[in-house]
Image (cartoon, rainbow, N blue to C red):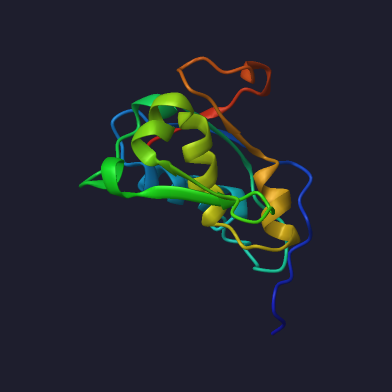
Length: 141
């Protein structure tokens, strides 16, 4: 008996995840698994077989504990002394889409498969999105 080797799929489904009143990390885990294709029985770690994900209501996602005051997003500009820090309380008020995007990106592999998977992730602040023509399927957590 031979091992099944999946081919890269061309027909990808579209899913909507509603992040309202759900923890940011739990929503990001579900999105990352769908983007990677881990919800399919034909999953293989070396093949890009994931689907498209639309995450709505990012501004209503919650962070548990003291993460709003203590957790920070850090990035470096590349210049000397260019370390920038933003608390998640500020990030969730000003740009909740970026907070969700960074959470999903951190749960994907840091290679070309992860970068390709992130191109299929769409994040929206409110409940409106621009992908109704793709007939996305609502996913319950």
